[in-house]
Image 1 (cartoon, one colour):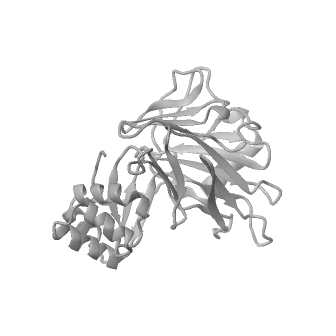
Image 2: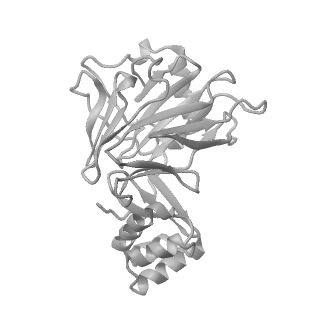
Image 3: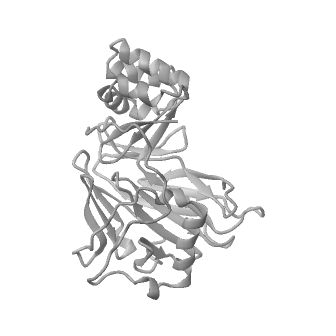
Length: 314
């Protein structure tokens, strides 16, 4: 597992630093349909923070891809045809792909304000956003109450890999041995045009992750923005962080820390990924964890599918 220590979050910015030009590219801003224009505006309006840390992209040399390049060690391909799905190939885990919702009905990629978008022709638009840390957010904008409430992401996984929904509202994929983490997904979220949370959760159907967005309530203000973030952030309270620090200082190995997680002594990390997270946190070191907990409010442990594990302050 490749490790990097990060002691602060990336500063939020609304500007999207992406420029893709030339070649047989996607439709340009001037060619985009109103649904895509409105969807891009909705992201800026409702959830601008998700556009922080967007990776700077070069034109794809592939006729099949809008984005096809290595981002901080991880190869990510975002297709022109949504039916091809987003492909991720990290040096630390097997390659896999994420299918996009309603790909059979969606238009080919449109590029607007540096954001790749697919109009699903059903009141929703899918917008994959590649981050400079190798993670990907696949945003969905929902225009009105007539739009679908279920968004399916079919995963093309290595043989034997299994998808799980965890007790904290996120999801993760383990390899055939049930030990190594292939990818993970942050807890589901959705926000309406007034900044209010919209009820949402994940379900699984085989190797497909389904985000259910219960947006049709009368109080919902449209548009709604929702997403799965492929990369994970676990939150530890101050109490759990202090217990983790004590274990590290006492020389407890990865298996011992994992046992503390699985027995509930350290709360905030799913048991299924405990060993991998414990190994990564021990490699980061107690000094780094203590630095992240300097304010005494606990920490976030961030896991990216390129294998990085970092900690940040809460």
